[in-house]
Image (cartoon, rainbow over all chains, first blue to last red; front, side):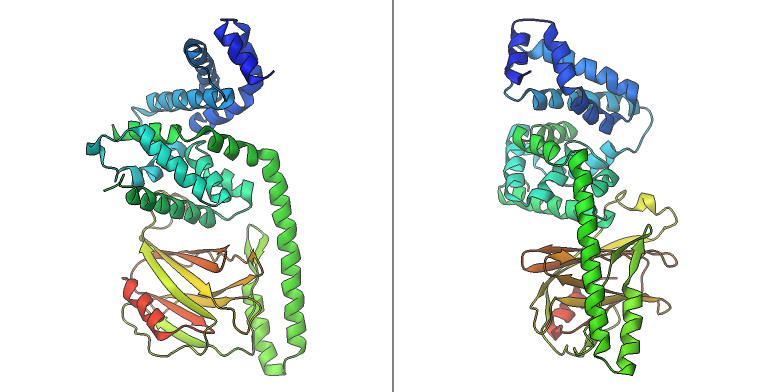
Length: 185
Length: 241
């Protein structure tokens, strides 16, 4: 079923919209939540919460790309759940590492300048569009989809050190780009 | 606050980029790519072996023995798979440059096949590799050399480097790039430190990364068909052991 048809069902408050969205995108959404939570039950609950959030937010939202919209909801909910799960015990996971790696750059951001996340995001997107396709995809797979280094290595047939160095270099280049744009002090 | 901005900024990356990263490299495509890489690697390794054998047939006895040794040492394995092969052009002159805190580079390379024009020294952030090396307790150093090959007199740019620790360990490895294919080699484990390498080919440049795990007193020796004295000195100045 076409995305816009499902979105229209949401707008019409047709409860089949949730079932249809689930049928269409369950694999994708579970892939995102699994990468973050590594727990089947948590992932399932996360999926339900994401679909509920979609039901509550459409309308007024009218996403053009429903899959990515649902993906963003799922990612946010999964991160919140992960944070809740790990609040008391310090657990190292791919998400922790992924956030730490990207945090190397973000920690240099000048928060006093009250930068909006939206502006930063726009610059990150602009930077990503300017770099080599493979580097861009690996960066997003690591930092947006929170994939493990091992999974990325297997997918591309690269050694671990190559992927790590590639990510490190991309982060360095991103930092340079943000500095050049005056977003980093 | 910082975490919030960080997450929101990453989360809000353009939809088309997010979609592309998922669609272009889903599990099925990844498998196909791995197969393709494997086949390409096998073909290129076979081609390298063939070239080497042809080269050997043209050499006299003494040189032949030396080259056989080099070739034998250059087949490196990781998890049972051959991941790289390199061989040395026996006709090329070579010089050795030693750099380190207590060694100064004095001799000059004999040719200009390779020049090093950029050096960065950095540290691997905690948690990146360390966690898989639970036997390692020392300091981690990362050296990044960007090498621009000039390709004179060879089919591919070549540089050979070796790392030694306190004079009691030495291991060399070579890097060769033929056409647009990258020969990778990884040498793992010796005493308390590990060397990891990777090699990228991007446009006109060969990039070689050396990741060193170890304590002080590590010396980097660079063997090449050509490094000029200024560049080697630059490395010596930048590597602060």
